[in-house]
Length: 240
Image (cartoon, rainbow, N blue to C red; front, side, top):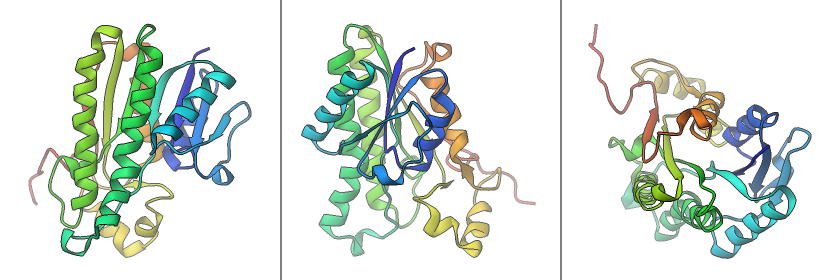
């Protein structure tokens, strides 16, 4: 049984992944908030911060110690900020980059250092706001666009080493992080109407795709940005 290291362990997507992968993978969750995790039996939990070089090194070192070298790394860590650039402070911008880009950068750096000989698979998370302009998303849009650029370049660099790097770009998803928005019935109804397929995304949908991306079934897939957004970023249906 191979090991998968999942960052952002206390979030809805990571929890869905742990439940989905637990019977086929040794699951290691990395989080700064272990008290929020309701882990299934056999899931290892590491308290570490992937947004720093030292924290990422600690997380991967501990993963190797408790569960072996991870054959897959999924970064589900992140935050969001809905605010126009004119009202966004430098610190707020840097916090968004730290949670979304830095965790991907340092996590990916540790992973390729470990797996350059054995190969492996990486899944990072972007957002539809990196693919199409959405008002008041300047900071998070920029941070997620940086994640996409990182993934494409790393996929090219490490393809010869058998390391695949892909990105999932979801729309609004019903998770704990989005609860301040999705918990408002008026906002939820209005947001659902923005998507060509209608509705709000679910964590299990993202977990299902990530599961496939780290599996042998996707062995020929790398350098891809895959939208799970009900068509929001790519189509405009006929208005009836």
